[in-house]
Length: 295
Image (cartoon, rainbow, N blue to C red; front, side, top):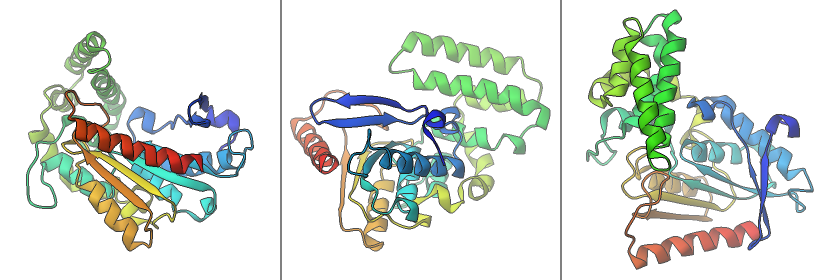
């Protein structure tokens, strides 16, 4: 289990709704690693929070997951230990089947046969997990450090561009100091060379992401209200994952599903110049989510 000191949860209060919000730092996701342990951690956090009266007087909690954590939250929500303890699951830009999403990140090919250039960020995360297949063991730690610097910089491109620019330069310098073949691999990252990385990563997708604990579509569907939100042009986790998630949930007997594909967000960032109708749709989506969360 995950007790309070281990969780080190951050709590705040949404005065307008009366909701208490806990943010649980998941150790592996924080370093761009997607493994079954993170799903177990989500399950443990939710079980602990639901059994803590200070956070959940009713004995039930809702969960919101963004990007890959949304898919993992859906897996956790279907587990027997959380039966009767959840009010809802909301997933923003999340995956239904991890290997399918990984395949898109390597190729840009969508299930309907269309092609969308994938974001290099997702391909680099796959590469991070696959490093032992590309470099000797002693080169993995320094190469991992350089790649994490690159990914940290990517996360700051919108919120702190000067810091992102500085960190990208640091990642490039770190790559140049590496021995071969790590230097070549880091070159793919710094050049954002998905065309080279993708085909090399494809053989390892199932081994890296095939565990059922990592994919809702390979797990038991939760029977609580589910809200799915996805950017209509998302090229990190493709928008096609949300319709697939909705179909999986309904096939599993969950009729309380609401989904929205919107141009107002990219992956997990707000887009500029919204249309009024899109704003209204997004407001209605979140209003419905908050109504269920407050019940």
